[in-house]
Length: 301
Image (cartoon, rainbow, N blue to C red):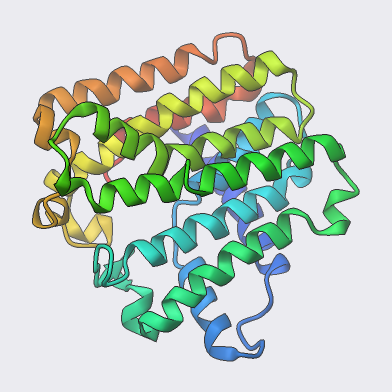
């Protein structure tokens, strides 16, 4: 491992540890009543995920000179939302995945009804954490209101949920890149973009910086999902923690299906480079963001 990769891994590990500790502090314990609900929440939330979205919150704050502790609540909130989306995505009525990150999907462990309600609970908890008075008092209230609005928009019918709906019914559409880009930008990209913007907003970044970081996140989010599509074809189930070939079984539109593997790889690399280009005006404190652009394109799980 070269020095750059060592530095990136050290930065990511430091941020993961901060996020893990903050999540455990913010959320009720697994023995809280009703125990089955909180057991289910902890089962999915603390299952070894990459923590990409909350790391992006912290890395964006770092890039503009913000304090990591100031943005930890929004980082936790966005990980709760991401986890809820995965639980619902795995349900029998949507993708019917049996495994997630190498263990039984939530609905296979606790049943579909509890899984559905666990996702609902995590979304509510996200906004509870995000707006808790002890955190709200430490940030610019106008910026916090903007973040709450942008998070709600990124998650709702014009964001993640809208993308999930189009993905679910995509077999009704003629396969085309415009529809596929809509799915990826909304289902995956919206939450990645708001993660970066939220970290910058709550760090009182300048509008030009926020806009540049938004462009970075849009390119990164699409690259991330294209690589996800590729890994579903060529990845190893042991590394991914779930079976491969699921997209083809579900007749989903993907970049490899439309463009082929090689063109999909080139597009992901191009988007990674675009993400890096948007960071030209940022100094050394944006190194984690730069490293993540490389990591997202090169990852194997």
